[in-house]
Structures are given as C-alpha cells and as structure tokens.
Image (cartoon, rainbow, N blue to C red; front, side, top):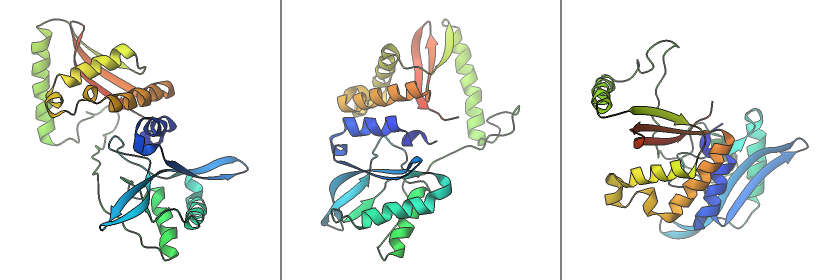
Length: 244
C-alpha cells in the first residue's frame, strides 16, 4: 500500500514526462489474475562512460521511492518468473531501479540475477526519516527531539499573534478542486521557490503531472490537503498522500 506505487501515480508519470513514453511493463499472471508488476522505461544512459541501453524504473524526481509490486507471500516465485523473462530479452544492457526501499521486492529480482551470474550492485540514495508514534492518548510528538518541542511552543505564540489579526482557521480536505490546487500553486510561487525557479507554477509540465496525479489520489481517497487561513485567505498549505 505504498502511495508512490499506485496506478494513478505511475500513469501520470507515463503520460506527462517524455522520457516515460517508452515504457516496458513486466507482469506475472496466473489463473487468479495479476500477481506481480514491474513498470520500467527504456532510456540510453552512460555506465562508466560507455553508452548503455537501460531499463530504468518508472519513477523520477517526484517519486520518493519505487519497487517491484507483487503478492508478498509469493515474492520469490514471482520475481524469478520476471527475471527469466528479462534474461531472455536482448534489448537491454542494464536494469536500474531508483530509490528502492531496503528489503523491497526488487532485491529478490537482484538475487535471481546474481544467482545466474549477472553483476548486481546497491548504493544508498534517499534517507527516509520517520517518527515512532507513542501509545494512543500520549503526546504524539513525545518522541521528537527536544528542538522540535521548543519549536512547537514558538508556533503556539505565532498562532496567538495571527489570531489577533482576524479569523484563523485550519482545514483538512480529501477532495481536490481546481480552486484549491491553484491556491496552493499561488502560495508556493510567492515564496523562495519563485526566486530559484523551482515553483510548480513555473514549470507547466510539472504542474500537469501533479494535477493528474492528485486527481487520481483524490478519486482513490488517498489525498490530504491541509490549509491554514487568515480571514479566508490561505497563508500556509500542504498537499500530501496517505494510506491507512
């Protein structure tokens, strides 16, 4: 149930970004239906300075992680079947998956390749921070470092000052509307990202990707949009996705 493995996210990547147009999807099926899927794209890359035909994960800058998706109880059998198909395909030189979580299903595919004498390697990329939540009823930030606890106290002071300037409200939405999406784009483009060229509104292709992906997340019930408003005007927003 990883957010970045959902069909709507992969479809948006494939539809919007040109590099994703040359996709190759490896699937494993039995009589019960789909059992495993590995979505890849075909690119030409350089490996130690040598051009190589590369099968790369259907992921990118906007994906925090990627993995081969399959039934957990049959990972070994499914990944072995995938590898046997890939092994007989002469159209690639390198298979590369970016930001695979440690212990993910793609590692089982690597195991099959290694057993057949193919070279494999892993290297660290994104470090994913997380917070252990305490028992229900306790302070949810009780396990946070002390500097975050003091920051929360300062936020309380800022909240009181903002409330003196008008009606301060907080909202959480699960459905995406055009109005809410463009409010977010305007707010993001009004900060430091505008000066670095990194705001979503400054990059039409990225804007289209997020619009399509978030519409899919909204239909699936995965979307979470948080907004802090002063007198009805958004002063802070966050768009996220969640699986519960």
